[in-house]
Image (cartoon, rainbow, N blue to C red; front, side, top):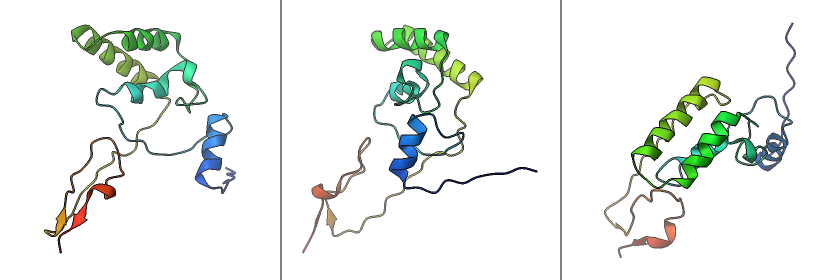
Length: 131
């Protein structure tokens, strides 16, 4: 027999418990906030356990590569390091990726100034309605 206890709480309470390492399983979504993906890989960085690293994943080989990755400028060497840290992340799989976020926009001809922002969601102060 399998017994499951579901804890019902608001999102901030679950996030606090997850960062404290008190949840065995939890799901949430994230979106990119920089173009190169370094923030997504911070979720696997051992020193960020309890913060970005909700899974509390710790792998010294990953951490060493991640630290080198942050110090390098854009270029072929940095791209090769990106591939290596992504391979480690996939091999150890502390997170299970279950979905990819997709956004669709629909606007009307009388809406002026709307454009999809790449890394932020507060766009409404830049739009207006044609009278």
